[in-house]
Length: 166
Image 1 (cartoon, rainbow, N blue to C red):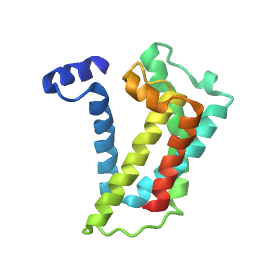
Image 2 (cartoon, one colour):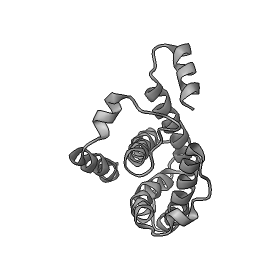
Image 3 (cartoon, one colour):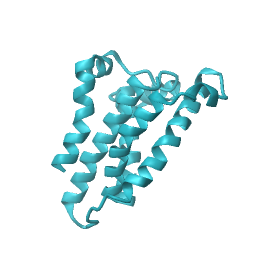
Image 4 (cartoon, one colour):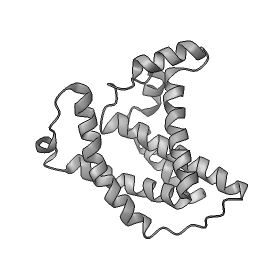
């Protein structure tokens, strides 16, 4: 994946590999939010926190790992995490009520803000739970932004603050 991003970076010249990776994640989740509604993004953000906790404290993770090469190991761990995230997302979604006004421009801005929150959670997940270096190694600038316990707290607080504001 990193080789593909570096080829695309060489083609566009201006964009860094980090920017292309983050914009790709952003576009995927923005489409998810615009297609399924703002409530789905809200429930995804809320379900992400307990899913991460359950993944980190789950005692049988090592027994569920069946793929052992580096890239497949990361995919296996992501699959195990999704086993926690998807049911939690479905449960939380049952309790999330949001108006679905598709013609409103404020709805688009809210979806953009919530999508930024999801991107932040995915980057935090990459740094603290499952290392995505097999697929994309972030630059030292991004490493500096997301490393350290105090920064970890504030970056985890950012999506919750977005939920309060949006």
